[in-house]
Length: 264
Image (tube, rainbow, N blue to C red):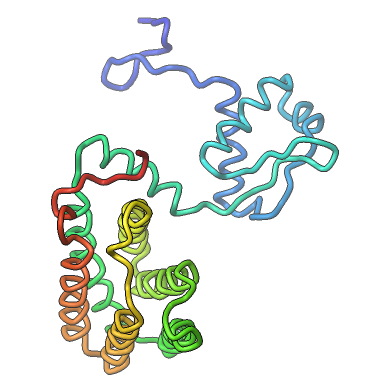
């Protein structure tokens, strides 16, 4: 039985036939995720792709727009323009997840609670693996954070501190050995960080002191020492306790009831 939307699906519901632009976007997306097209590569000129796919310029540009909304390409117009391939960015996933959470009225405390399930587990998994290079890389992140604080007497460059601290958390998650856990925890961390950045932009009462930053550095060093000692239970418990302490500070006042806010 036919339908204006397409052919019947496996359970009797009609399936819309994909548009030509969607098919082209799917082909190019597949090349990007398989690594056939790498970040920084420039796609062939429009005229070449039009001939390759047998489509008009408007159809090709619609395919480009699909990939742009997914942050997989960046299209620049003009004589030196073209479509450049981008690396998939966890921030893109975090924005969409954040949108769903915000629409659902999810509190930031709820998101942080989910992080407290995932990150301590990752810390324990990392301790179980404990490759030497992971210890070196994590210590380098901590040294970078320490240099930021000591060179300024405080973290005089909040953006640099945030980037270095994010790198520590990202490394811990990535090196835990489970890509799915790393991605999920990374998305949640990005949602919390973006929400807090929005909140801090409205008030100055959450600014941290040099003592706060040094305390964070000591916590990072303690975690690495537990990982290096291959203390799985200790690393997991310590990081859970650390996150609970940080969470109380982040969520004080109205934080426990504040809805995720990324798009206000």
